Length: 354
Image 1 (cartoon, rainbow, N blue to C red):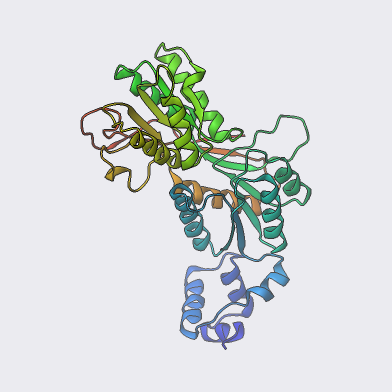
Image 2 (image 1 turned 135 degrees about the vertical axis):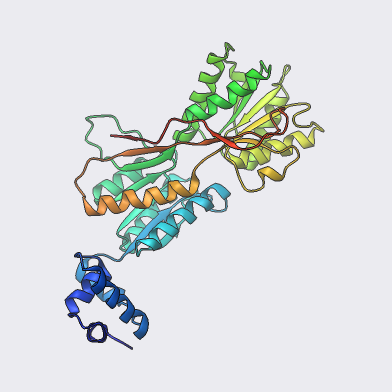
């Protein structure tokens, strides 16, 4: 098996230069760098990551803890994380916290014990133990998709965070339906306690207010961010004495559940009920009717989380940041409109908050 000494001899450089190229620890002239990389390729040299980690205290690995990995939204986030991590020479260890605070704490500790350099976590609705563990052990971490609000001045640790805009795109969906003449617009919201749920409820209420419509708490139901919950919640709101004429579902899984509930009652979209959903997904364009949706920049969220984490590793003491990425409105036909094409951005440009 070729060694670093063999690579250095073949490239005509020192072993230290080979180390700097492979570990990206010091700038190396482009020609010299390429000579080292060519020698690595020619000889088939594989770095000893275990030995390197003992010297540098780095394993070149990232822990990723996200629930519902089977959900297409999180699958695309995972693809963004993986591609960006690989681009920067990092591997991934993946765990599913199942949106359970106790299990979340266990899997994060497990990833920490595997000596990952840092973590990317989609926190649960009750992230207190998670935040305490990461803070106590000074684990570099980025919160993904869901933000954790820490009051100023309470001494609790703060972490970098990246998420999509939530309130404004939801308000736009409500306003779009109101513009089509709907006056009873329901919302199937996600799991209580999640920041994404709070933000989409806020957007729903803002959209109603902007359209001059009253808020009716009987039209707001929680589907717990799952298909089964979305089906139960939709069935409940359809059972009202005066049901909604339009519905906004707050994630893709609950959209599937809502469609099941409608089908089970022999109701059509948009003939009997107009539907708009938060989260676009690959087959939304294949439904009949085609689903009008807000599309989140899922792969970009994953890639940005990796960048934030690597920046944190490079500068551990810099202030924490929250990055919010814009969404896009995908205008199709489930809202009751004629066939549409193209996307229009509905959020403000990317924002970075202290």
